[in-house]
Image (cartoon, rainbow, N blue to C red; front, side, top):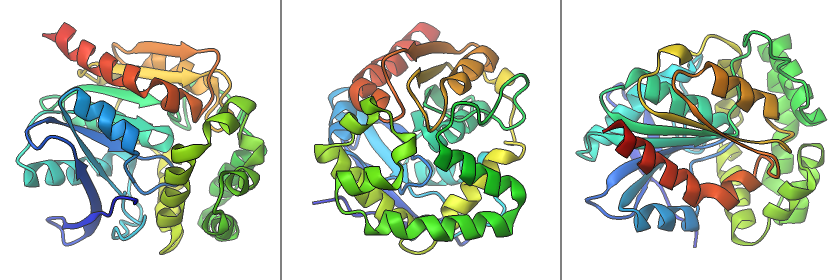
Length: 298
Protein backbone atom coordinates (compact mmCIF):
# COMPACT_ATOMS: atom_id res chain seq x y z
CA UNK A 1 0.00 0.00 0.00
CA UNK A 2 1.32 3.43 -0.96
CA UNK A 3 1.96 5.89 1.91
CA UNK A 4 -0.58 8.61 2.56
CA UNK A 5 0.52 12.17 3.32
CA UNK A 6 -0.43 14.41 6.20
CA UNK A 7 -1.74 17.85 5.25
CA UNK A 8 0.39 20.45 7.06
CA UNK A 9 -0.65 24.10 7.32
CA UNK A 10 2.16 26.58 6.78
CA UNK A 11 2.43 29.91 8.65
CA UNK A 12 1.18 31.87 5.63
CA UNK A 13 -2.03 29.82 5.44
CA UNK A 14 -1.03 27.54 2.59
CA UNK A 15 -0.88 23.79 3.17
CA UNK A 16 1.37 21.06 1.83
CA UNK A 17 1.30 17.27 1.73
CA UNK A 18 4.04 15.93 4.03
CA UNK A 19 5.43 12.42 4.42
CA UNK A 20 7.44 11.42 7.50
CA UNK A 21 8.83 7.94 8.14
CA UNK A 22 11.64 6.23 9.99
CA UNK A 23 13.04 6.63 13.51
CA UNK A 24 11.35 9.47 15.39
CA UNK A 25 14.63 10.43 17.02
CA UNK A 26 16.62 10.27 13.76
CA UNK A 27 18.26 13.23 12.08
CA UNK A 28 15.91 14.30 9.27
CA UNK A 29 16.72 13.58 5.66
CA UNK A 30 14.70 16.09 3.64
CA UNK A 31 14.09 14.70 0.15
CA UNK A 32 13.02 17.02 -2.69
CA UNK A 33 11.11 15.27 -5.46
CA UNK A 34 11.56 15.55 -9.20
CA UNK A 35 9.53 17.41 -11.81
CA UNK A 36 6.73 16.42 -11.97
CA UNK A 37 6.34 14.50 -8.72
CA UNK A 38 4.61 14.41 -5.37
CA UNK A 39 7.27 13.53 -2.79
CA UNK A 40 5.94 9.99 -2.40
CA UNK A 41 8.48 7.99 -0.38
CA UNK A 42 9.99 4.94 -2.06
CA UNK A 43 10.11 2.17 0.54
CA UNK A 44 13.66 0.91 -0.09
CA UNK A 45 14.99 4.49 0.08
CA UNK A 46 13.19 5.07 3.37
CA UNK A 47 14.69 1.83 4.69
CA UNK A 48 18.17 2.81 3.51
CA UNK A 49 17.79 6.05 5.45
CA UNK A 50 16.41 4.32 8.56
CA UNK A 51 19.32 1.85 8.50
CA UNK A 52 21.58 4.87 8.93
CA UNK A 53 19.52 6.41 11.71
CA UNK A 54 17.89 9.00 9.43
CA UNK A 55 14.26 10.08 9.50
CA UNK A 56 12.67 10.47 6.08
CA UNK A 57 10.90 13.80 5.43
CA UNK A 58 9.44 14.74 2.06
CA UNK A 59 6.61 16.92 0.83
CA UNK A 60 4.72 17.84 -2.32
CA UNK A 61 5.92 21.22 -3.54
CA UNK A 62 3.25 23.93 -3.95
CA UNK A 63 0.79 23.14 -6.73
CA UNK A 64 1.43 19.39 -6.68
CA UNK A 65 -1.04 16.86 -5.27
CA UNK A 66 -3.02 18.59 -2.49
CA UNK A 67 -0.40 21.27 -1.78
CA UNK A 68 -1.64 24.83 -2.22
CA UNK A 69 -0.21 26.59 -5.24
CA UNK A 70 2.32 29.40 -4.70
CA UNK A 71 2.08 31.13 -8.06
CA UNK A 72 5.31 32.67 -9.33
CA UNK A 73 7.50 30.91 -6.76
CA UNK A 74 11.25 30.74 -7.17
CA UNK A 75 13.49 27.78 -6.38
CA UNK A 76 14.56 29.51 -3.16
CA UNK A 77 10.95 29.81 -2.00
CA UNK A 78 11.07 26.17 -0.92
CA UNK A 79 13.30 27.09 2.03
CA UNK A 80 10.66 28.68 4.32
CA UNK A 81 8.40 25.69 3.71
CA UNK A 82 11.17 23.26 4.70
CA UNK A 83 11.93 25.32 7.80
CA UNK A 84 8.26 25.32 8.85
CA UNK A 85 7.97 21.54 8.41
CA UNK A 86 11.14 20.83 10.37
CA UNK A 87 10.25 23.29 13.13
CA UNK A 88 6.89 21.54 13.45
CA UNK A 89 8.73 18.23 13.84
CA UNK A 90 11.01 19.75 16.49
CA UNK A 91 14.05 19.17 14.29
CA UNK A 92 17.11 21.38 14.02
CA UNK A 93 19.91 20.34 11.70
CA UNK A 94 19.24 18.02 8.78
CA UNK A 95 20.57 16.38 5.64
CA UNK A 96 18.98 17.07 2.29
CA UNK A 97 18.87 15.41 -1.09
CA UNK A 98 17.04 16.16 -4.31
CA UNK A 99 16.70 14.35 -7.61
CA UNK A 100 16.17 15.93 -11.02
CA UNK A 101 13.95 19.01 -10.48
CA UNK A 102 14.41 18.49 -6.75
CA UNK A 103 18.16 19.02 -7.08
CA UNK A 104 18.02 22.84 -7.27
CA UNK A 105 15.69 22.85 -4.25
CA UNK A 106 18.13 20.81 -2.18
CA UNK A 107 20.89 23.23 -3.22
CA UNK A 108 18.68 26.15 -2.14
CA UNK A 109 18.47 24.68 1.35
CA UNK A 110 22.25 24.22 1.44
CA UNK A 111 22.81 27.80 0.32
CA UNK A 112 20.25 29.56 2.50
CA UNK A 113 20.33 27.42 5.66
CA UNK A 114 24.08 27.09 6.31
CA UNK A 115 23.57 26.64 10.06
CA UNK A 116 21.04 23.82 9.65
CA UNK A 117 22.12 21.79 6.60
CA UNK A 118 24.67 19.16 7.55
CA UNK A 119 25.26 18.03 3.97
CA UNK A 120 23.46 18.09 0.62
CA UNK A 121 23.33 15.90 -2.46
CA UNK A 122 21.91 16.90 -5.84
CA UNK A 123 21.24 13.89 -8.06
CA UNK A 124 20.72 14.34 -11.83
CA UNK A 125 19.95 17.99 -11.11
CA UNK A 126 19.20 20.61 -13.71
CA UNK A 127 21.63 23.55 -13.90
CA UNK A 128 20.59 27.22 -14.03
CA UNK A 129 19.18 28.34 -17.38
CA UNK A 130 21.75 31.12 -17.65
CA UNK A 131 24.70 28.84 -16.82
CA UNK A 132 27.68 30.34 -18.65
CA UNK A 133 29.12 28.10 -21.34
CA UNK A 134 26.42 25.43 -21.02
CA UNK A 135 24.29 24.46 -24.01
CA UNK A 136 21.30 24.01 -21.74
CA UNK A 137 19.10 21.80 -23.91
CA UNK A 138 21.97 20.05 -25.66
CA UNK A 139 21.58 16.28 -25.30
CA UNK A 140 18.02 16.44 -23.94
CA UNK A 141 15.40 14.07 -25.29
CA UNK A 142 12.81 15.60 -27.65
CA UNK A 143 10.06 15.71 -25.01
CA UNK A 144 12.12 17.96 -22.72
CA UNK A 145 13.29 20.14 -25.59
CA UNK A 146 9.64 20.70 -26.48
CA UNK A 147 8.63 21.29 -22.86
CA UNK A 148 11.28 23.90 -22.13
CA UNK A 149 10.77 25.46 -25.54
CA UNK A 150 7.15 25.99 -24.51
CA UNK A 151 8.26 27.45 -21.17
CA UNK A 152 10.53 29.91 -22.89
CA UNK A 153 7.73 30.85 -25.30
CA UNK A 154 5.71 32.02 -22.30
CA UNK A 155 3.13 30.95 -19.70
CA UNK A 156 0.29 30.34 -22.17
CA UNK A 157 2.42 28.07 -24.35
CA UNK A 158 3.65 26.09 -21.36
CA UNK A 159 0.14 25.72 -19.96
CA UNK A 160 -1.08 24.33 -23.30
CA UNK A 161 1.85 21.92 -23.50
CA UNK A 162 1.45 20.57 -19.97
CA UNK A 163 -2.33 20.24 -20.28
CA UNK A 164 -1.62 18.04 -23.28
CA UNK A 165 0.94 15.93 -21.43
CA UNK A 166 -0.82 15.41 -18.09
CA UNK A 167 -3.48 12.94 -19.35
CA UNK A 168 -0.76 10.52 -20.47
CA UNK A 169 0.72 10.49 -16.97
CA UNK A 170 -2.69 9.96 -15.38
CA UNK A 171 -3.57 7.12 -17.74
CA UNK A 172 -0.29 5.18 -17.35
CA UNK A 173 -0.84 2.18 -15.09
CA UNK A 174 2.18 0.05 -15.97
CA UNK A 175 5.89 0.54 -16.52
CA UNK A 176 5.47 -0.03 -20.26
CA UNK A 177 2.73 2.59 -20.50
CA UNK A 178 4.79 5.11 -18.54
CA UNK A 179 7.82 4.41 -20.73
CA UNK A 180 5.67 5.05 -23.80
CA UNK A 181 4.79 8.54 -22.52
CA UNK A 182 8.45 9.56 -22.37
CA UNK A 183 10.21 7.16 -24.71
CA UNK A 184 12.65 9.76 -26.06
CA UNK A 185 13.89 10.54 -22.55
CA UNK A 186 14.79 7.00 -21.53
CA UNK A 187 17.99 5.27 -22.60
CA UNK A 188 18.12 1.49 -22.10
CA UNK A 189 19.63 1.77 -18.63
CA UNK A 190 16.67 3.88 -17.44
CA UNK A 191 14.07 1.63 -19.08
CA UNK A 192 15.59 -1.26 -17.17
CA UNK A 193 15.49 0.70 -13.90
CA UNK A 194 11.80 1.58 -14.35
CA UNK A 195 10.45 -1.77 -13.22
CA UNK A 196 8.96 -3.56 -10.21
CA UNK A 197 8.39 -1.65 -6.98
CA UNK A 198 10.20 1.42 -8.26
CA UNK A 199 7.95 1.63 -11.33
CA UNK A 200 4.83 1.31 -9.15
CA UNK A 201 5.99 4.11 -6.84
CA UNK A 202 6.91 6.32 -9.81
CA UNK A 203 3.53 5.79 -11.46
CA UNK A 204 1.66 6.62 -8.24
CA UNK A 205 3.81 9.71 -7.68
CA UNK A 206 3.08 10.90 -11.21
CA UNK A 207 -0.65 10.30 -10.72
CA UNK A 208 -0.68 12.28 -7.46
CA UNK A 209 1.42 15.07 -8.95
CA UNK A 210 -1.12 16.08 -11.61
CA UNK A 211 -4.38 14.75 -10.21
CA UNK A 212 -5.43 18.26 -9.14
CA UNK A 213 -3.90 20.10 -12.09
CA UNK A 214 -0.62 20.95 -13.79
CA UNK A 215 0.35 23.97 -11.68
CA UNK A 216 3.13 22.45 -9.59
CA UNK A 217 4.79 21.22 -12.79
CA UNK A 218 4.16 24.58 -14.47
CA UNK A 219 5.63 26.58 -11.58
CA UNK A 220 8.68 24.30 -11.35
CA UNK A 221 9.47 24.81 -15.04
CA UNK A 222 9.07 28.57 -14.83
CA UNK A 223 11.21 28.70 -11.68
CA UNK A 224 14.07 26.84 -13.36
CA UNK A 225 14.23 29.45 -16.13
CA UNK A 226 14.58 32.50 -13.88
CA UNK A 227 16.98 33.48 -11.12
CA UNK A 228 16.99 30.75 -8.48
CA UNK A 229 17.34 33.18 -5.57
CA UNK A 230 20.75 32.06 -4.28
CA UNK A 231 24.36 31.76 -5.42
CA UNK A 232 25.92 28.37 -6.02
CA UNK A 233 29.40 29.76 -5.47
CA UNK A 234 28.53 30.95 -1.96
CA UNK A 235 27.29 27.63 -0.54
CA UNK A 236 29.02 26.75 2.73
CA UNK A 237 27.44 23.38 3.49
CA UNK A 238 29.08 20.26 2.03
CA UNK A 239 27.57 19.39 -1.35
CA UNK A 240 27.83 16.38 -3.64
CA UNK A 241 26.78 16.37 -7.30
CA UNK A 242 25.69 13.04 -8.78
CA UNK A 243 25.15 12.67 -12.53
CA UNK A 244 24.94 9.88 -15.11
CA UNK A 245 26.43 10.23 -18.58
CA UNK A 246 23.48 8.35 -20.19
CA UNK A 247 20.91 10.87 -18.89
CA UNK A 248 18.57 12.27 -21.56
CA UNK A 249 16.25 14.16 -19.19
CA UNK A 250 18.99 16.26 -17.58
CA UNK A 251 22.09 15.85 -19.74
CA UNK A 252 25.48 14.97 -18.29
CA UNK A 253 26.78 18.46 -19.04
CA UNK A 254 24.44 19.88 -16.38
CA UNK A 255 26.01 17.79 -13.63
CA UNK A 256 29.48 18.56 -14.94
CA UNK A 257 28.69 22.29 -14.85
CA UNK A 258 27.21 22.12 -11.34
CA UNK A 259 30.22 20.19 -10.07
CA UNK A 260 32.52 22.91 -11.39
CA UNK A 261 30.48 25.91 -10.24
CA UNK A 262 29.09 24.87 -6.85
CA UNK A 263 31.36 25.94 -4.02
CA UNK A 264 33.35 23.03 -2.60
CA UNK A 265 31.28 20.39 -4.39
CA UNK A 266 32.48 16.82 -4.66
CA UNK A 267 31.41 15.12 -7.85
CA UNK A 268 30.21 11.63 -8.68
CA UNK A 269 29.96 11.60 -12.47
CA UNK A 270 29.05 8.05 -13.49
CA UNK A 271 29.50 6.87 -17.06
CA UNK A 272 27.13 3.90 -16.94
CA UNK A 273 24.01 5.54 -15.50
CA UNK A 274 21.06 7.59 -16.67
CA UNK A 275 18.46 9.75 -14.97
CA UNK A 276 16.57 7.05 -13.09
CA UNK A 277 19.17 4.33 -12.75
CA UNK A 278 21.62 6.52 -10.86
CA UNK A 279 19.20 6.92 -7.95
CA UNK A 280 17.85 3.37 -7.97
CA UNK A 281 21.29 1.81 -7.91
CA UNK A 282 23.20 4.39 -5.87
CA UNK A 283 20.90 5.76 -3.17
CA UNK A 284 22.71 3.89 -0.41
CA UNK A 285 25.97 5.41 -1.68
CA UNK A 286 24.36 8.86 -1.79
CA UNK A 287 23.45 8.50 1.89
CA UNK A 288 26.86 7.18 2.91
CA UNK A 289 28.44 10.09 1.07
CA UNK A 290 26.21 12.59 2.92
CA UNK A 291 27.26 11.15 6.26
CA UNK A 292 30.91 11.09 5.23
CA UNK A 293 30.82 14.73 4.13
CA UNK A 294 29.36 15.76 7.48
CA UNK A 295 32.03 13.78 9.38
CA UNK A 296 34.79 15.34 7.30
CA UNK A 297 33.39 18.80 7.95
CA UNK A 298 33.74 18.11 11.68
